[in-house]
Length: 381
Image (cartoon, rainbow, N blue to C red; front, side, top):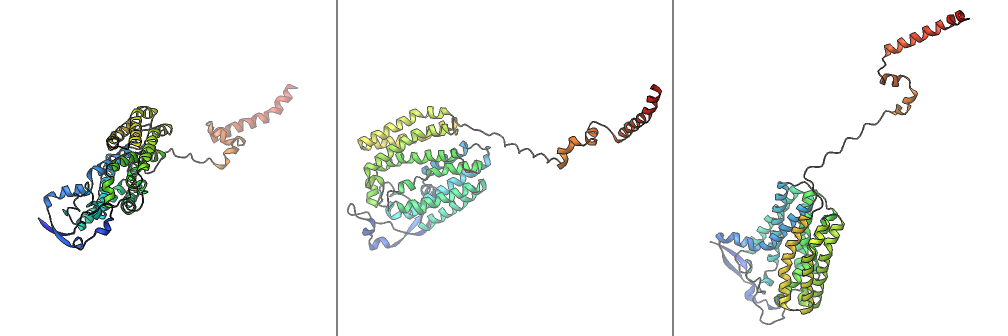
């Protein structure tokens, strides 16, 4: 057991609707010692990483790699998987570090390691720094473009989305960052971002709205208590409309991927029942405004995502099992006098196997025939 010093979380609010900043007391500003149990450290790291969310991010990154029409490489897949895992873990750890005072006000986050002082803020930030540096390094070994996307995604989540959660409901659109990991996987496989990569990212981006809007619906009291400007708190009607709109978009996107030759038309057909049921649940959520409707939509969104990824992989349109052959060497330029060959007597004769000696012999016989021609003419007369 080791002792570390950490900052105490804010006290629970005494009244509803009061900003958290107005409830800070002098005792909340005190530094306290806490015990660090090294045996449970792997568990704290998993909780700092939000292991379930990170696992989902890794799966979508692997799906992007598998959908890309590139040559499969186990080493590259391992690098992009490890890099995505580490950068996602770092982003979640920084997010928790920034939101300790607010997480302590919410029932679903009050048991997080930083809130409960199982690890110190310095420890958490050090863990995040080690993860993001090593994660981006692994992604760079797979593809510099994948590394750039991973670093940008980390900054988007920690420096843009997290602060915006307390400012504007636009954080929901900014925070739909799940569309970036498939781009990272695709970039690792091909080194580029083809239209298929963007369509895959669009699918993951659209999925997050029915999923998160339904999830946040039953947590809106918690979010309001902590002072978050979540759509479900400030614009409940918009929450349900947006969930329905993006569910319809999810149902239409398989048609686009098939039309763009990213998948075969079987994907559009096979995914229709799953997407249609998601639209139905979103419609029920829009009409009923019930907690039960929100829970059903949240649960089924996981089924829809899993089925969508599997069906997309089964209907992949383009495979490349071997490296593409090297382009044929360009033919050597013909000599400048090539166009004059028909006017040259010597070169065509030489190509037919005539040697200089035979040419001289022919010329000699022709000369003898020419000298004999007058004598033959006189004898004929």
